[in-house]
Image 1: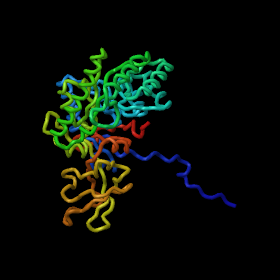
Image 2: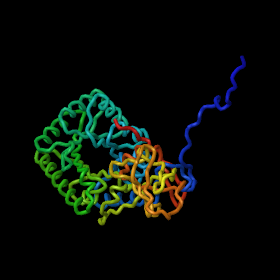
Image 3: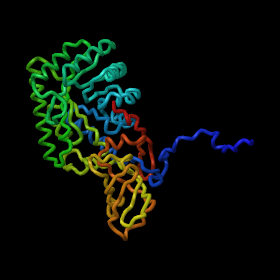
Length: 388
């Protein structure tokens, strides 16, 4: 019996899928779906937030959960940031490996695996963590002592979010005392973050909520001070409240993240104050089907864009006049065609503004960074998927 014929291609390893772009490509030739960064807007947002912090005499510790990119964190630190925040321990690993020297885990954690990660990270970086229960303190103190490291612990206080953090001076005292009694820990101060204040649509609403949060944080600082416990750091705030946090006289450090990108949710808010960001992050997508009258279908669905803060919208001048994104399926975005006499759509590239940048970035491997109509840089999203 004769041998079956082999396809020569079977003898070669299947190559990896190609990247969506190469440096020097035209923006319109970038493969989709792809996350685009407008470098001019990005650079301006980066400089404006650093200047806001510098003018207010406040340290800037940007939140890396917004971008998950070592390249971006390095740019933030080069511009003057004192370090970064991460929300999860595993998320911190790529940044630590790249030499980011100061990392704050702005979240509580429990479990032997998490304690082991904290100890390992503390061997490589200046690590600080959050606690809101004396049992967390005891577990971290024992793990740090066994691992031969010393870790800075910040007591988290609830200043309006109603999620994590102690909500009484007595509970705060118990935390501070427990941290102070542990040789393997040092008391760093307070984490005082009000996430809900960031997303209020009106500038005056954000101002009032931020001021109330600062008042609550200040009361906790005064309580500890009366007991002879100094708070070297009071950290919190975010993109929506940064200008108020910087002028509060309470916060020593702010943690904005989304300011670099200005996603659709933040972009719908009022920005009449001292910090006025520009849209810098877009999702490029291609119209892949126009088989149904009044409907166009693009290649960016739920696996390319997060919709927890609403569906993405078309960027001005990129189809917003005659198209509306109305539904997200796994791999498809459904667009309503508002004008029958509009341009031919099949094959058109469109720019979408994601509603929420943080989970959208987590869906992609790279940022395609553009300037003057061409791809200038490619930045890996090294911490994507790291949620432990």
